[in-house]
Image (tube, rainbow, N blue to C red):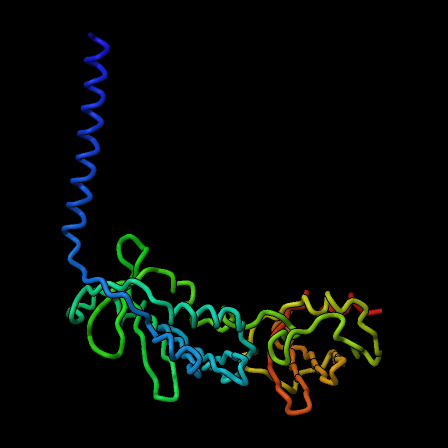
Length: 292
């Protein structure tokens, strides 16, 4: 009898705990007055019509532009371009055109802008299509740091969305640029088998590059903000590809210690494209190590 009473007590306690938990959930859901809207930030049918993005925070602004189905990133301070990481740009575009849950928070911005839509912490995405340009304003995160406030340029309605776009809210050219010294974007992917000849001219010597894969794995250090082309030229790298395209890299000494400027020119039958970037002395020395 005593055992049965104990069992009844345990069962009763468990039932009360479940009922308490359910009542708590109902209470939470009943207080959520937000209006749920299922939509995409950019209509999916316009995904392939996007020509450019401008990404801005309080400190910087960059542009992502499509050039013959390839993306480039432009530093608005120097006006110089680098090949962009097309995979990241495509993921960014796909995220913007994916149907998501949005919650309507307010019909207008409050006086103190506690949503942070027009403060130093705000972030603006401007995108351009043949029909014109449009803007998305991102504000503060909520207290849980899992959602963010948003406003479009259509009206003053404030929404709340998840944080899946946060990884793209950067106006740093370094976060959007392709990282490789030899671009895998500009004239297409390049493998060691595609290279017919690669040599470096330095100190009046012509040295053959022995390991093409190590050359392709090298990374740059970002866009050259103010390239001085009158600097001392320390080396020239010439690469010939099997499809008759070629790449020319001019490496120049800069005023900064342990840093070099690289002028990269990609030559095809149709046109030439030139970029300016920095590399470290470590990278420069790695180039010299892979010569015969």
